[in-house]
Image 1 (tube, rainbow, N blue to C red):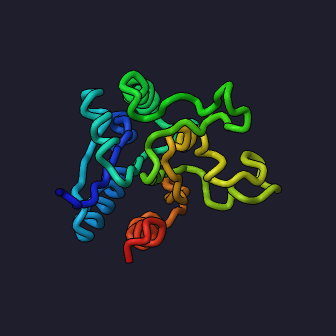
Image 2 (cartoon, rainbow, N blue to C red; image 1 turned 135 degrees about the horizontal axis):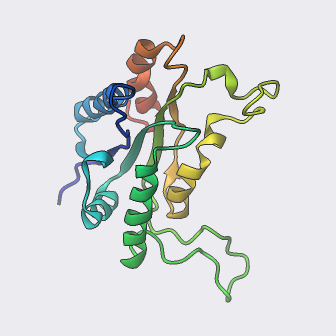
Length: 202
């Protein structure tokens, strides 16, 4: 029996020639890949922009113990190609009834809550993202845009999809202020420390 742990790394950067070539998100993707290989994981990879087969992506999700989304934040959300990916892949999991049974509620048990019908328990999901926003934009009610909300709050439309399917959500990792004064190199170098901590791999 194969007991090798598996991680699925999804890179959803969308290239805009001469403006956004994806080098930073690829660097974080590669840093995660190197980390998990050093921990003897089998690494599964998907670069959404390069295309994908829905059935294969469903199987990757089912095989993975850990799933990490690497994404830029474009206009306060992920690139549109990731929404398309989620719609197609999670619909595939729904059709095969492999990601979840139903929304969790039953007529027989009114105490069952919406979103508790997942079948992917035991898996973990994390978002690693790159932002133009500075770190001080978050967790401070005096800040104009996010009004005290955290990055976890800002990313909830991404993480809830996995939580709906029973996957545990672990703390996100973020590279801030990438066009001005952000500590890009330091944030990249500290990434393995975060991975080791949130996935208890020390």
